Length: 130
Image 1 (cartoon, rainbow, N blue to C red):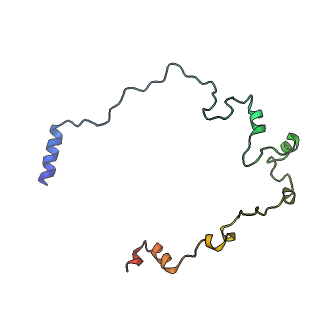
Image 2: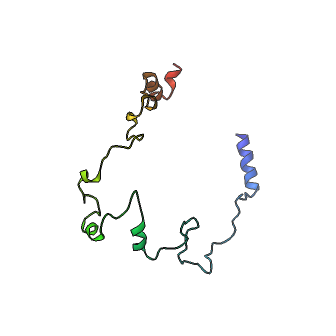
């Protein structure tokens, strides 16, 4: 208790100065350049002429447009549901690729949890030392 009283008296006698140093009041630059610029990592080093021309060439998990623009614009959600599923082709993976981990050879599959491992997880590891 005496140590706390001594610390309070020392703190009252000494003015605390923060360790952080501020540079000054914030101010915006006098001139801001808002013109579009090409990203430094862009492979083309040119900006597209318009968003429509960019969209016609852009890909997101495949082309964004299927067929003519008039047929895709008449669909409510673009090309979703525009074709029967059977017309999209096979859904079996190519040789050497797998959709599910259980299709892999046994050495690559997940090993099932043992009862000891489940008990260790549920008790936060305390069952390992009991």
